[in-house]
Length: 99
Image 1 (tube, rainbow, N blue to C red):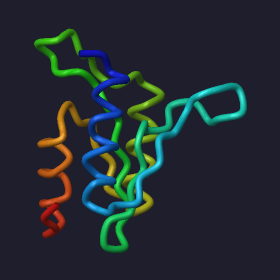
Image 2: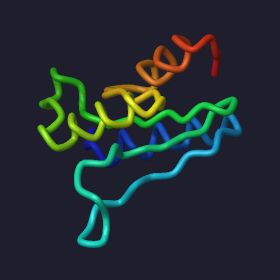
Image 3: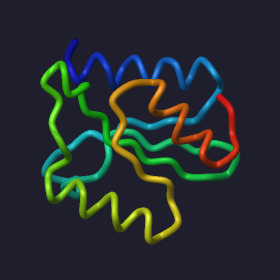
Image 4: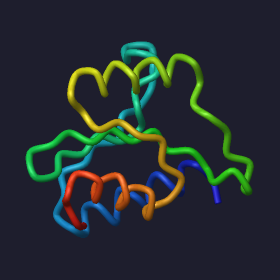
C-alpha cells in the first residue's frame, strides 16, 4: 500500500457516507504542512494527516505538519494523524459522531 492509495481509500469511504471531504495538494502556492484531508462532519471541521501504518513503513508527521496540526487544534478543529479509516472513525467518534 502507498500513502496515496490510503488517502484515496479514506476519501472514497468518507464520500460514500455523504461526507464533504477535500484532499489538500501541496505545492508552491500552498501553505506547507497542511493536513492531507479536510472534512466537515455535522458542522465540525476534521483535518487528517494521513500516514502509512508503522508496520508498513509509515513515519511521524514532520515538525511543520505537527505545527499545523497544533494550530488547527487551538483554533477549534479536530486535527489528527490517521493510519487507517478506522482511525478516522475513532477520531470522529470522540466527538460523539458515528460514521
